[in-house]
Amino acid sequence: MTTDHVAIIGGGFSGALQAINLLRHHGPRATLIERRSAAGRGVAYSAAHPDHLLNVRAGNMSALPQDPDHFARWLERRHPALAGGFAPRLVYGDYLSELLADARAAAPDRLTILEGDAVDLIPHGESWRVALADGRTIDADAVVLAPGNLPPHVPAGIDAQALAPGVFVAEPWGSDLAAGLTAEDDIVVIGSGLTMIDIALLLEARGFGGRILAVSRRGLSPRAHAAVTPSTLDMRPPPNAMALLRHMRTRSEEVGWRAAVDEMRPYTEGLWMAADLDERRRFLRHVRAWWDVHRHRIAPQVAEKIAALRAAGRLEIVAGKLGAVTAAGAQAEVRYRRRGQDAEELRVVRRIINATGPQGDLLRSSEPLLRRLIARGAIRPDPLHLGIDVTPQSEVIDAQGNAQPTLLAVGPMTRGTFWEIVAVPDIRRQTWAVARKLSNAHWVGGEGL
Ligand SMILES: Cc1cc2nc3c(=O)[nH]c(=O)nc-3n(C[C@H](O)[C@H](O)[C@H](O)COP(=O)(O)OP(=O)(O)OC[C@H]3O[C@@H](n4cnc5c(N)ncnc54)[C@H](O)[C@@H]3O)c2cc1C
Image (cartoon, rainbow, N blue to C red; front, side, top):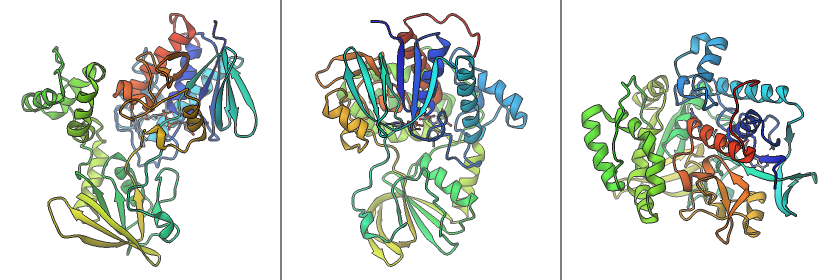
């Protein structure tokens, strides 16, 4: 069967790039379906504050795998003062929007951008029918799911209904986190990773002068980038998680931890894909937390701001466990226990912000589209419940274990198969490969876009 029309559900970075890449391959027509009013930015590059910087240098943020300096050149033209460093995420959103608008302008008959909420996807003869919440339907020969991460779980022990309105923020993106806070207020952030860093920066930028307590199991937070001499390693990758840890220790002593982590980058996807389920589980249990904070680093300017907040006693990061959370009028009493301590501590806070990070367990998702697809057996969780089960070609695997060549998924929800599929450099490669497959063609050149 030929593929004339592809529907892409989700118009964040992954979906937008999927559409752009289909056009660049002179492939099938595409309809990009996005529930937000503007496609192309997604969660990461729309609701950001100017203080929120990319955590990857401009030189590695090209959206186009065949043109690695594309973003760096764009930045040089548009914002010369920012060239070479860590640009604001909002500026990167402008870049993506422009790329999408250019793609559409170059081939208006081949790309439709549709504002709508996809709530179902139904097999329709040999093709698919996408149903939108407002009753519209779109028929397509193939569908690419690009829904982004699922929102974080509400941590156990928190009953949002029992707290005064506005005290518990279940999902930090898109909420006005500083609303109603004063310099006398304390807040708690659950989690100490990249999301916590974003929250601290945002509150600071909005003039919040109070104290932030960030609690996470290990109390680890992202490390800073530094000028690193790139080292390349020609090696047989370590055969398992424990060997990986040993290898990282040795290499860290030899070349520094940043270079040691960076030089593993070309091998991590292959390592993950070659590992059996037990090995992957061991990696998640023993290495993941360490890996995340060293691998996904923050810009030095951001690290400085965070260090200043900590030095001033306005941000405390605690390794420990959250205990009972109870209402106290317009505030909440939060109990927590530091790691290695028996005694519980108590803090009365004005706000509790959930920054536990995205979750990937499909079975806990309340998204109507995903729930219906699960019920119909068209998608299933990967064995570790990190996202949607796909083949190495990004084809979605159905409940019976069959790969579906006309239903694909891209972006972070495919991390069960690829692991390293969160950042721009990985997703741009994936969407390129999917475009190539759906176009059944080889790329013929860079003209037009
Ligand atoms: C805060 C943050 C900062 C980051 N910073 C960097 C960085 O500096 N460098 C880097 O390389 N990577 C970074 N990343 C990682 C990476 O860029 C993102 O993971 C990537 O943008 C994922 O894009 P996505 O399109 O898959 O998901 P999303 O951005 O979540 O987009 C998914 C889109 O799909 C839409 N959608 C979902 N379901 C439906 C539906 N049923 N119908 C219609 N629309 C739907 C949503 O509205 C959303 O717009 C960051 C990620 C985050 C969250």
